[in-house]
Amino acid sequence: ALSMKGTFPRGERLYQFANVVVSPDGRRIVFAAVDTLGERALWVRRFDARVSTRIPGTEGANNPFWSPDSKKIAFIDKTMRIKVYDLTTNQTTDVDKGLRMMHGGLEGWTCSWSPDSRWLAYASNESGQNEIFVRPFPNTGDSRWQVSTGGGFMPRWAPDGKALYFIEPGSGQLMVVSVTTNPTFAAGQTRTL
Image (cartoon, rainbow, N blue to C red; front, side):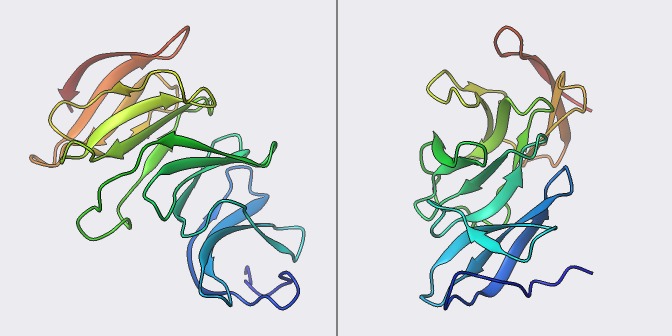
């Protein structure tokens, strides 16, 4: 069994652990916790070490999501911006502008990495309704594509990366859209499953 006991920076104690997520390669966990100053942030810990390290730039962060290659973590920061922390470069990148406060808070916010860890699908409610968008990573300055037309949440990539699934909020129906990602992103017609 995994114990959250371990070593933290000198004088640091963590409280209110939440959103504990194991990396796809099974070597690390990421979690949200509140430090002794009352600040929520994301922390990462290797299973072969007893040291947890605070991820810089994640103050107020919630809902971490690992990329399939276990090298990146997507999350929402305290200003409601979608960001990605890259463990290989130790850089945090803005993915999309802020979200409006969602009904019930951010507990239900999700995103999904493409199987090759190059594309991020997520729900954004900037129009007043959750819609599903896809954006490349790390080239976040490139275009983003809206793939839902009647709203959407809980996006998930197909294991082969050739389709994106999501729930349509009004009907509760499972939707699917076929996609291609090479050389660029393109989405087909959205249909009900």
